[in-house]
Image (tube, rainbow, N blue to C red; front, side, top):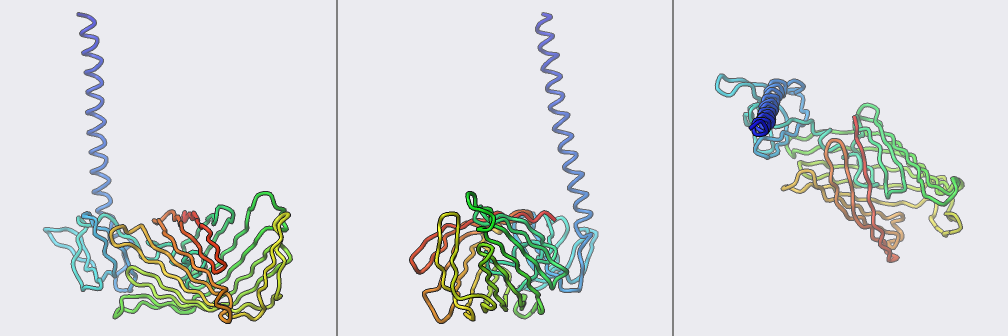
Length: 319
């Protein structure tokens, strides 16, 4: 009998603890939800054309601008939200989250390698490209962007590694209501070292269209202040690379998200290093999985030699 009482006492206490923990979690969740609901409009700006992404509790995604804040006895706090389809009231109880569009797609300043005309701004990042190239970027306000990277290829000396610096100024960026799109233009300079004695300098201008789903970029670049022929060394391996000084090249890129999965994007780039030589062309096609903290790219690069190379990157945007 004592054993039975001991078992009842043991499992009765365990059952009580399970109920207590469950109730505590439910209460904590309810309090947090109410707190979030009270503060969901805290940082919203109205009447200044800042674009927001609103995620509703039913899973739908809205993109647009806040016209004004509203309230009612029945629905509580809310806002008039302007989208490409018109203006509609959106109430706090319908909203799961609100994010400025500039931070929602925190990789809009690049496709893969191709820089877009949009600034890095506050979307500072660090990442690793091809699992061999450490890369980082930061912005000054919304007009100046810096990136820098260095390869860490195992088994080759430091003076055979690859180094890259890029500076870009976004001199025009405007949101057009009639097209529901942002159009930006930028100019920049890229300085690269393939080994410590092989310099490549490019000047470029680019334009970017960013709509509700897609980012489309076109770029033209000019190779200057460099030599016409390079002997590249990677440990015991050597590669001949003819690349004429004064070459004019072009680049195109697209980043478009899938409607059914907002964090999954298709990305693609086309490069031609010398428009006088169509064979100097490469195409990169792949996918990006990204949110406001991390991004991961996977795909295949095709060259006219022919040559096929897989590419990948992992990027962290911690701030």
